[in-house]
Length: 377
Image (cartoon, rainbow, N blue to C red; front, side, top):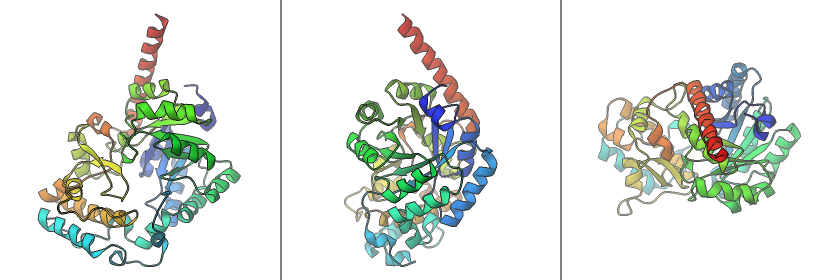
C-alpha cells in the first residue's frame, strides 16, 4: 500500500497493533504492520527487557510503545506505600471478598496480585512523571512511535520524543479531545470509537472518525470495531490514513490471553460486552460477566472507585479469578472477564498473528477493488 503513514513509518500496511504481549508486537511488525507494546503493566526494568527482546526479533523494523496518562488522577496514587490494604477502602475490599465467597473462588487473598503486586509503583506509572519515565526507557531503543492514552501527553514526554525524532500519537474519543491533544503536541491522532475494547468514549467509530479528520491537521488512525479488511477499508474511506487494532489479537496464538478467557471470547457475540468503570475506575469496554454485573448492581455494589484505586483492587482480584477458573471453578469462570471490543463476535478461531494480518490485507484489497468497480460505473 502507498499511503503517507506507510512512507512515514516504513511499513507495508498502515495497520497499527496494540498489545500487552511482546510476541504479538513483534509478529505484527514482522508481517508488515506496526506493533505497539502497552507498557503500563511493566516496571522500567521489565520494559527494558521486553524492548530488548523485541529489538532482537524485528531486525530494525518499526514498532512503538504505548503509555497511560489519565487526564485526572488522585495525587495519592504516586505516594509511598506498598500494601493494597493501605490504599483501597475496606468496604470495597469486603465486596470483593463477598464475591469470592459467593462464587466459590479459590486461591487465597482476593486482591493484591496480578500486574499490581506493588501498588505504589503501579500508581506512579500512570502519572505524567511515571509515563515519561517509561518513555525514557523506550527511547533507548529504536522505537518508531510513542502513544499516550486517556489524557494529553505531558510536555516532558513530548519534548523527550521530539528530541529523539519520534512522533507522538494520542488516543481520543471526541473531537474536543483531538484538538486538545494536537495542541499538546500530538503528531498523530487515534480516533477510537465506543466499540473498542478498553477505555473508550461513547461516540461510534463511523461518526467519530470523519469528524476528527475534519477537525485536525495531523494524520488520523481509526480505532474501534476494526478486525477485518472490509472494516479497514471503511475506516480509510472515512478519511483515516490507517487503523489501530487491539481486540483482534486477543485470540491469536501469540497473545497473552489466558486459555479460559480465550474460550469465552471465541464463544461471545458482539452483544456480550459492556462499557463499565468496574475494572479501572474509568469507562472501559470488556466482556460481560458476573464481575461486571455485580459491580454494576446498585443494590449491593459500593460502586467503583476512581482511577487508580479500582484498578489496584480489580486487577489483583481478576488475576485470582482467572487462576481459579483455569483450575475448573465454575463460579470463577462466571466472573472471568477481559477487555475486548464489540468485534469479539468476529473472533471465532485461534490463528497466528501473521495469518490475521494477511487476511486483513487480502480482504482490504478485495473491498478496495469492489469500491473501484462501483465508482467506475
